Image 1 (tube, rainbow, N blue to C red):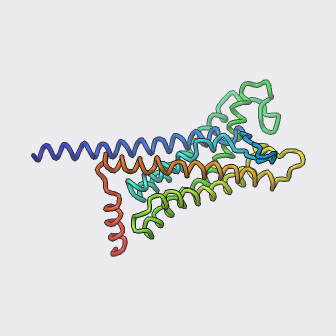
Image 2: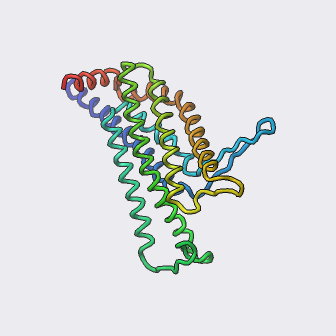
Image 3: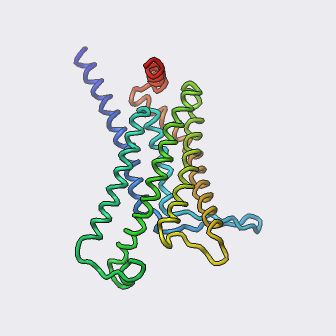
Length: 264
């Protein structure tokens, strides 16, 4: 009986680590993709309602971004605040690694002549790399600041709401933390990108900088907000399935952690 129970414990423990690695992998992989693609293209999804123009413009890098918050919410709910914060810090190191590789790739020979805004000539095959390198460094600088701020807001607010509601109202901590942190992220990343990435944000004739930035901020936030609301059901289903599959009781773990923090 002891040997059987021991094998079961190891099997469950392995499940828990595998799921953590998968969630962390999706989080970090998505982070790398959105930082490299980042601001390389603005997607214009402007539409009309009853003849009224509704501008909707987002960077291509924002498309996979909501999955990062879903992953940290899963990790926060199932594995706790410390692991969620650890993944956030690893994400920061990944951002630094991306910048290093971009810097290294541009520093190694051959060294093309830089003529147009610090870029090789248009007919030089290396121009594509140097353009992406330039935008990536600016994008990562913006996203690192916005990312750290937003992700820590997400994790801390998630657990603050959980503590206030005494572990209940999963939908509130999922949406409340994500919607707040994504507003922080949208404002920060668009503003910093404009200040650091030359020509990455297109200012059309007749439009002011403030108007363009507001459209980008609101478009990015609306996209993230809708994505966050849509992921509520998958989050509920995922938490219910994973807690059973991994044999974890988040409410019990929360109560134990809360008591430890209270009396420590």
